[in-house]
Amino acid sequence: MGINKIACVGAGLIGQGWATLFSSEGFEVILQDVSEAVLEESIRNIRSTLMFLEANNLLKQGRPNTVLEKIKTCTDIHDAVSHADYVQESVPDRYEIKKQVFKEMDGAAPNHAILASSSSGLLMTEIQKATKRPQRCVLVHPVLPVYLIPVVEIVGGEQTSRETVMAAYHLMEELRKTPVLLKREVPGYIVNRLQAALLREAISLVDQDIASAEDVDRAFCMGPGLRDPLVGPFLRIHLAGRGVEGFIENYSQSYRYRWETMETWTSIPPSAAKNVVREVREMEVVRTKTLEEITNWRDEMLAKLLKLMRGE
Image 1 (cartoon, rainbow, N blue to C red):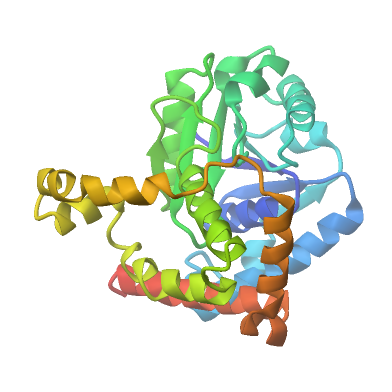
Image 2 (tube, rainbow, N blue to C red; image 1 turned 30 degrees about the horizontal axis):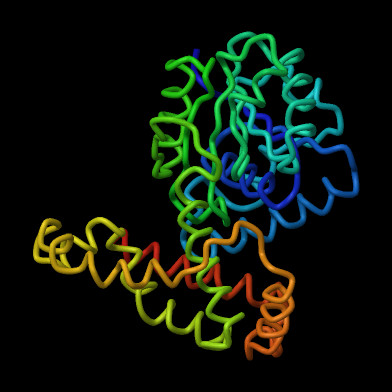
């Protein structure tokens, strides 16, 4: 059976992004949350996002108002998922919440429906224990903003069927996303594990008073950040060493010195948290612009970058 009707459970930032993406690609969407006030604000935000996409020639399926008509809202999970072919859950990233929501979705959704989680780090093997049909549960993790960043990480739990994983994969391709499959589960998946390693060292550089938060960001954005959209970590070392073997032979020693002096803590030390908060608050962009202004600027730049990478 094909996927036509989609339910988005949870109308926060991630749920709004999914609803925007699905509706803009022509799908009928039911957006669910427990609060009418949250849903009303979400629709306002989605309308604004659709107008942004149209202004940047990224809206392919009609005008914003036409697309918005594809989204219905409700406060009851049963009503939201009872006729859905695919459900994208985006509730808070805590096992007790995810498991309760998946239990409810499993009991109300049609037998053929795929139940996908937007979790940014939890394991589907644990979440699907709350369901009677775990074979249809899968992890489909987007990167914010959902409607702009192409990559989506997909991984099943121990009881997820191959058919479910591949159906989710093909749906993401239909949405013109860039799906990547994990061979097995690991907390944080690919993207957030890479981000976690980078963030720990960034925090350490600020905490040790080696550089300001502003200069750490500047070093990244005007250095590897310029290259990263085109060249990932493995292709980078292949190019740097004139072949990956050459890199390993010539740079292993110098990297050992770096790794030996890097932090290994697994929770942010209180002193580091205090220093980072102070440093970020002192950044010029944070002092002079609102969060909304920074977000809008980020999205405008991402839209331009995506067009450039697509050759548009």
